[in-house]
Amino acid sequence: MEKRTARLTVLVDPQKKATFERLCEQEDVTPSQKIRQFMRDYIEQALGPDWKEQVFNDGEERK
Image (tube, rainbow, N blue to C red; front, side, top):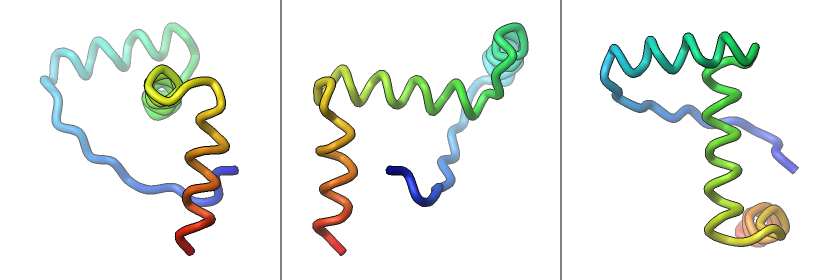
């Protein structure tokens, strides 16, 4: 499945960032873990429940 990582830089309002970090801490997750969860949920919403096959197989075909 996921073999490598890539950096994503996002500029956000400092107050929203602090609130987000505080909420993540309450859930005992890192902000990165929560962002990855948001991304998975969004991709599944857009592509459907079998998105992993589509996303990860597409990457294999392009090599």
